Structures are given as C-alpha cells and as structure tokens.
Length: 142
Image (cartoon, one colour):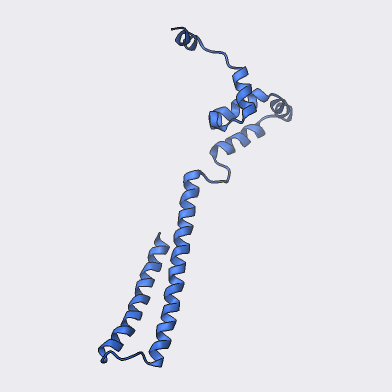
C-alpha cells in the first residue's frame, strides 16, 4: 500500500494544481482560461488520469499478492521440499520400491495434505488398508 499511498499523495498535488488554475480564473472576475492556462489544465488533466490508472494498477497488484499469500505460494512450500528431500535421501533401490507401493504414496500424501489432498484412488487405497482400533470398534457398538 505504500506505493499506492505515494501515488494518492501525487494525485492530490495534481488535483490541487488543477484547482489553482480554475480558482485563479474565477478570482480574475470569473474569466475564461487563457491559452496557456488551457494547455496547463490539459497537461495536468492527463497527469491526473495517468496517476489514477497507476493507483488502480498498484492496488490490484497488491491485492493479487495478498491473494497469493492467502492461497499459498505456487512455488515449493516446506512440505513439498520435505517430500523432495525424503525421496532423495533414499537409495535408488529404495526409491524404486517406494514408487511401487501405492499405499506408501497415498499415506505420505495423507500425512502431508490431509484427506482433502488425496485423489479418489488414494482414498480408496487408504480405506482398503484401514483397520479400526479397539476404541473405534467400541464406539460403533456402544
């Protein structure tokens, strides 16, 4: 917002300059603008419009940045980095074995991303391997 704030201050200065031209003509007996004043007015008006556009762009850019912070950075996050590090810590034979075991992959995704992070196949794999605990069984019965 600092950039947008600076631009808003600049917009205020340009607007004040426009108002000074108009006030000067009014104080001189409510006369029309001279050709020089008209040129200044149109130049300041163009500046005013440009600064307004810059403010909109700056605010939209900041809004996009805030949205990205809320939704997460599309780059590798800590969990993604951890997953990559886990894979490279394994020997090549262990890496091949890990790729074969679909349950390990689904469980790793569940641990890192929760149930929402699993696709339909991974959910099915997890449910097939699910064994209720004694507490869960007693809750179901009682």
